[in-house]
Length: 218
Image: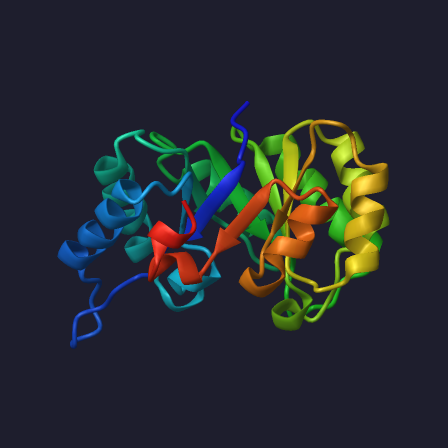
């Protein structure tokens, strides 16, 4: 199993003036991140504007990114949503070659219960060939993955290996660190709180700012 320690970067998606994806610039961005020592990359997380891309565009970006990265660093695909079966089908259907894990945001807008969040991720984990990184960002989704639900998923689903935490709730971070399985990883999902999260035991950050100044994060 890959260990997602250090700095991962949620790669931005550049666009041409006509709205199409700017693949030459994307290649430049990827090469710059790798050459400056970034530990791993996330393709089409929130920062990559995945919600604004068609299925065809996503598949093209993933294929291009995997070919460009060429296994030089671990690569994570952002695949999430509020329709459990659709997320499962998207994970099944995308070309996994070159990818090491899935980053999956919790269901948004619907505001599911904690049991609903648990069942959503459990269903995904049971059908995914790749490890899953949970993504908790209640400021965007409208619901929080509680520490209890995180620990329950970590204990019950061996495919769930980490959580990207962007809730800003340090009591929650502490509870996760206290109760998690030994090999489960807590990852900062918010650049400004990364240092105190690492002090609590987080293994690193999935950064946005790292797109601009990767040399400061490597």
